Picture 1 (tube, rainbow, N blue to C red):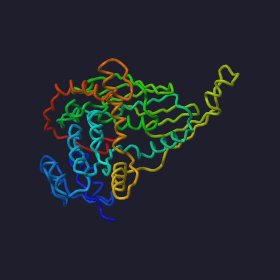
Picture 2 (cartoon, one colour):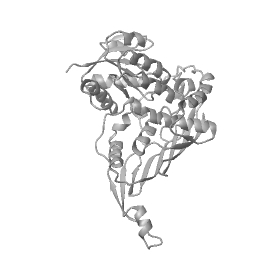
Picture 3 (spheres, rainbow, N blue to C red):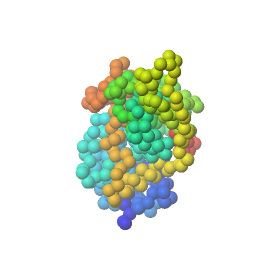
Picture 4 (cartoon, helix red, strand yellow):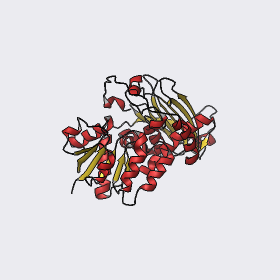
Length: 381
């Protein structure tokens, strides 16, 4: 089997980590043949690959079969469109773009023979994979309620100061929802399905000197009448990670460490109709089903992308599935701006009009030259 020739565009923190996975052997059947960053890089000097300062030159070089785009969100549309127009396969860091409208443009540009994937790596986390299997099996019965408080995404001020694009409308199209919580929103809808409407409430620059949201609360309604709540924050420490999915036959609870399955006997709806006990409730049993295994999430997604190209393996996270989480994030913001519930499917053009009002008055910040201590492993939740 011939190795896939990969170009990496963007040599920041996450790009460097992806390169490390490839060089360490955690990613197979892949060789890095080209790199692109706006300036020369010490990392590039250590890799036997041609370095470009313009991503278009890398894409036009004929050195690559595919590209991994690991650049700020504001560049995803431009770079993705160019790579797809040249027939390259694309693996893009999350999110798909600043907005659903941008994501739709990218999807429309992908040819039938192009493999287009998104780095939604938490889908391969063993705990979420187990929850997905249970939800797909129907063992919980009909969905009744969902709730995820995900507030352990704390970020200090220096996190924003050392970047010119983070937490700006121009650079990210949002903050907490488009950066940190996009993973959680993806998992939320992956497990429980898309809601039919959302009411969002956001704090903009509540905890940090930024213009975008650093706190968000959303209320979801689902087609069957089920309801849900999502809470996120980058200003709370130590924060909470508590995910509950309640069904007619039981419940899944994940506290960031342990996964517990509760089974009801009989189902809640059956007991409700048949019991003569005024203060009774179904009997229940709890099982600790926390997976013991760990997973190199990013490496698994990159390996899957490569095998999709070489051997037509089904993608774990096709780019088109990134539209749903982006749609929810956009809708929460739009609802917070308007003070009204937003229904799905999202009106992408109407949202883009509202976003453009913020983009028109947003500029990138001047980067601080402060020396930040960076431990990428500490950034994941």
